[in-house]
Image 1 (cartoon, each protein chain N blue to C red):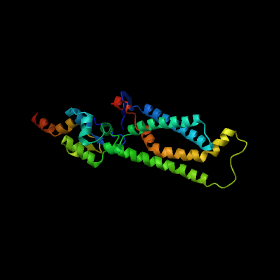
Image 2: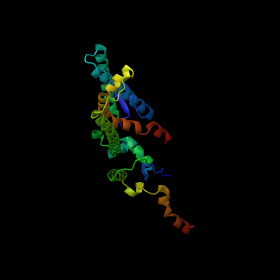
Image 3: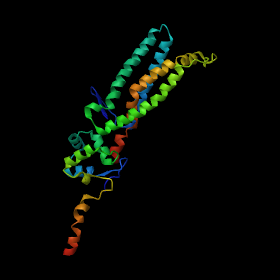
Image 4: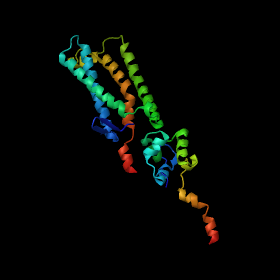
Length: 93
Length: 167
């Protein structure tokens, strides 16, 4: 479940991606040139990043920016990945 | 914000909002005392040695607090963190907008040419203080100009300890 958008009104997957790849806040902060606290504010949705920072984060994770940030609630990545394969599974059965 | 401040071997952590607010209150208590002492000195042609000593002690104390104060509120040029820059800009806007009212009040008081509004029946101490109030306000404005944006930043930043625990 993505975190609530907080003050920024933006949903994001930064915490999930970080956990998945075993990256600390400090490592991500150093890579994109911000304070580690700012990563915390971004993850909680309390701060909306600039376009530049959003693209820097997207580049760091090697994902399109819309896969990380959204104005709409984000569905879990697993649900997105397997959503397309379900009908085929049903056809096979 | 630099929430982990070190003076030699002493480390002071400022993640806690309550701790930051106590620190801001301490800075302004020292500044208020300094302002009062300076206003008293201004009213006397010859000040006693103890008064000058007190003022010098307050200057040193404020100097030390000012160094910590400006260090923990962060150095925008060094880090270039966009959130901090945004918060700092907002704090400056709020601070200087509030100071505008103080400056208008001083301008009105400074240009007042009517009858003396201070009653001669007031206690001597209060009478002396009111007579020095333009000088007191001038110093207060100067101190607020130097410190208010940082104070707003330290006062309003969320409690980092609570945010970390709530995750």
